[in-house]
Image (cartoon, rainbow, N blue to C red; front, side, top):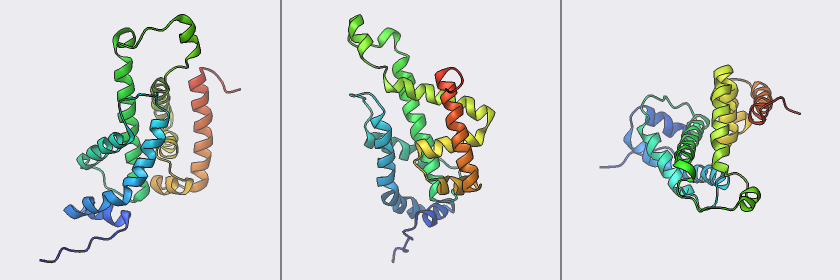
Length: 193
């Protein structure tokens, strides 16, 4: 029996996956894996050294969560990477929150006061603060929060973000600028200077 040829276009494969074609997901992964790995690598650079989650593990965890998603009607490549970015963000924030929940340092080696003053705060705290700020932004303006998620976490271009959100490139650019200012103010605890 001949195996049907599956298109090598990510959007076509996503639409085939929507229709329930089992080979589509298997054909999709090799086409998007390197991009997912690049995104994961970018996230991992922001994490502290010795972080237990590696880029490959982050991609694998995101992939496992993606294949469990049933209710998403995939639209195109940009939509796929926007959802993948959201999943990676959730995985990293959940890991950061878990580390932070350990009582009084969670077994971290004791530091002198001088050492503690020299060492910057862990980037995982930054992920949690950014996540909290993005949640607050989503409560005020969900689209601006989505733009940040797609551009910052997903690495999507202005055009890809516009396509995923079904808005113009200019709208995305305005939302991106306003969201950055809003987040800067939120993260600093006051108006931007």
